[in-house]
Amino acid sequence: MVDRACYASAQALVTTGAATPVPGGSGAMFDRIARRYDLLNRLMSFGMDRRWRKKTVAALELGRGRDAGADTWVLDLATGTADLAIDLARRLPAIRVVGLDPSENMLAVGRIKLARRHLADRVELVAGDAQALEFADARFAAVTMAFGIRNVPDRAVALREMARVTRPGGRIAILELSTPRRGPIAPLARFHIQQMVPRMGALISGASEYRYLERSIAAFPAPEEFADLMRGAGIAVIAVRPMSFGAAHLYVGTPRRERA
Image (tube, rainbow, N blue to C red):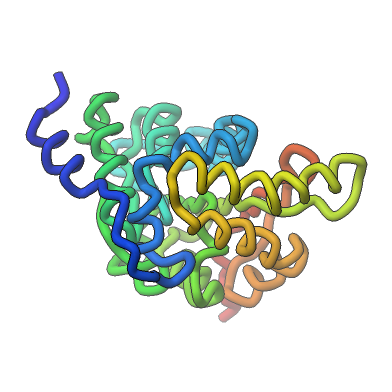
């Protein structure tokens, strides 16, 4: 049975927010749209985000000769409402997960979902900043981040932090939306992101913040450019995988070993 106290405390946090302007991509911005974020994610990705997250979990290769025991911890950055953290816990039943996000309202929604799925004992949600992780070096077997790196003010700093807290040989998997630039579906994808996403966001959530989401997707670096940023932050890039004709990309890497 779901803890009623958990519902009460979490639901008290989930608000629509006041009219005071907040910085785009900030925790305060996501506080405003937390209640409808999951629904909008489904609509923004045409429901494909579920499959993308499954591929993200698989890319960690935990349980295939890598650590996957009871003392194995995975860090999920920009965990939001905990969708990826939940997928990690479900698909890798031996591990434990820390989900970190700057938005308290998003975390409140995530805690309700964890309680419903009886996963609160294996997934811990904490407020924090991906640019300043309060964890020891090499603390985690793997690090993930879905739909969050484009909102980080200093991406290079966040990437260096990911490399720092990941064990040698561990995987870093970053899933991010992108705008297809070539191919037959590129014009349709651009119309969807630039026109439909903000309108759906405003209609369903009553929040103009979805105009920021559209701009942030359009402004995100091209895949090879972002892969170069990873390399510069001390991450050896293993793969850059386009998803659904380039509607998203999965970046997989591992901390680069420094030569003696």
